[in-house]
Length: 218
Length: 218
DNA sequence: CCTACCGATCGGTAGG
DNA sequence: CCTACCGATCGGTAGG
Image (cartoon, rainbow over the protein chains, first blue to last red):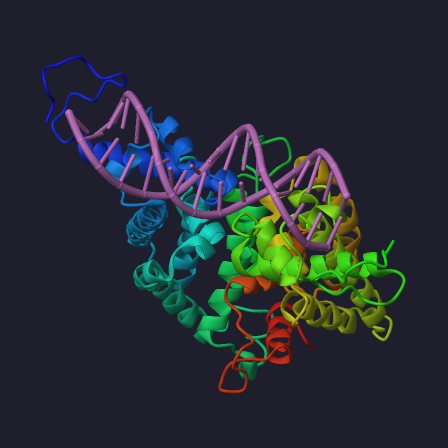
């Protein structure tokens, strides 16, 4: 749709499917901004400026600001599920799958350029109710991966401080998932990956400690 | 400072130290609103309306909106520390103290009228950096109560999935605290106390499950 | 995707 | 603590 008139201020890319690229750029920039200062404190002008647009132009790609938030969360779940399913293929035992789930989830939360799920956790409140249903439906798929794995491990008596000794203490997989994922998700509030190596943990170390804290290693 | 002229629209209380009461009412109403829709999405007009004031009047009690947020968090820490110290007095063993810490923390997070700490967790990002230092200083006192207790329990080999079997697995108290409090704090995102008894957990049951998940019971 | 703009709202203030 | 108000900003739109 480019017209052979004067070149626009922000030069567009040369390839044919520019639109999808620009939309992706908006999603990525929004994720970074939302993660940093929150959805409500981020203005559409901030988002536009981050990708070199003028203030009204994001609305060419999204109907309103809330749709950007929804797109950020969807992108996070899509990427997260993708990474997790791929990583799980190499893991043959329940214990190995647990290690993969934990390590991959930390990557999803803390890798550079992977701010989408942190935004989901932080700004869930700001998502309109109509959108929540759709996101929950996708999130359920991810939660099921965890819950199935935890169900196996609970059956083996490998999870929790008491399960190995007292079978009555076996908790159901859902509450177990909420406890473990809660502990991991809460790292978004305190984990900083900035100056690693100075005595702070990198994600491998953090994942290892987490695994060892929650799972018995026979 | 009341003048014997016409009665104001919103009738003031009759006692002498009205000001402190009104300030407290603002803090409580703000906590409820912040918890529900977030600091950024709550307007000063919302807050004023919730206590029957006009839009400009909260600024008679607070210099700006951020100071209200700070006051909410301070109030939460003050109340939280107070409740916890009192509750700990009856607990004589490390195990008993852990149970008290967990149950009291759930109350702090979920009791009606106790939205302050949930606001601290949710809206920490919105607090100006200058204020953060003061809040952290108070919060450190609370964290120390937990960390000391967890240090004892770790020494006894009662915390974590492996500590009883492998002394090398004993994690330091800080990471242990972050994991356990993370799991508990994360309940602010999913726990609903609305229709208890229908198969959902009340806070006693939730605390019991949490304790049993994290602490070995010999 | 830009230009140019608008109506609404927001935090905050002066003056009593 | 109210009345009356202001400057700034915000999400969003028309028209090209």
